Image (cartoon, rainbow, N blue to C red; front, side, top):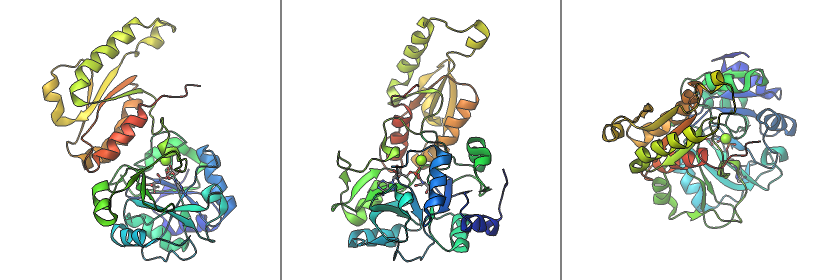
Length: 339
Ligand code: TXA
Ligand code: MG
């Protein structure tokens, strides 16, 4: 499938109802014209995503919310005035320009203004709103490089805009303003502390909150089994995993089983010294939460590509971007539907 840096070509494809993958500061998005039902429907087909899970509408910096949203509450306006462009999505009442397919029929819409210059150039050239989920198949790890998109979606995308590696590395923070007090639906690239400093304490998503795939127990999952544990539990977890694997009956002929039991430990670089020889592959992430977020998804993909069976991941402290990193690791470790 064609890829490159031709923003005008990408904008034309969007105008014709096609699909363009593009970089944002968080992850790569799979974009289509947010005002067209037929274009948005293609996204759901390519992602193999259930239609009831709404898409985020991306707007250019400075674009008016008129037509895209109605009744935007004052705290939401205050927040976006400071946070956009950036890794924050607000959920508000849907305006008439948003196609029904884009929101899966919901009367609310997620909106964000991305910070990546290539995303902004695309939005400016296109001239409308671009509906875009992360450019991966449903439930898989989000792409943070153009190569990831090409590996996942192949010829199902009309064009991939290549803007290099994403700077933030985890998806946007989602705050729901559509039901009164603001509620955090998904921790992400904008730290909770920074948001709460502007709008006050965020509520917690409850049973009445809208279903969002990013909030399903198993999501953002690599092929390997993931154990997300506190740093002090890493050594013991590696030992238990090895024991468990040794006990499992062999169902496959020997050559296929050769790799079974390959364990990797994913943790901040400085943590390894305390653990001695783990007898596992060491995948070192930067020590700061922002660096962990930036490298997380590429790490999960690298480990899958290396044929690792089990990833034991050390959870970071929940402060700053650590909340999003911990959230994604827990979901990657969540119960899988193995069918
Ligand atoms: O950083 C990001 O947010 C990336 C980039 C491409 O912008 N996009 C992204 O989209 O992560 P996606 O579709 O993979 O995740 C968006 C999440 C989903 O869990 C979706 O259900 C939720 O946002 N969402 C979107 N609109 C919503 C709405 N109206 N109500 C509730 N949840 C909504
Ligand atoms: Mg996604």
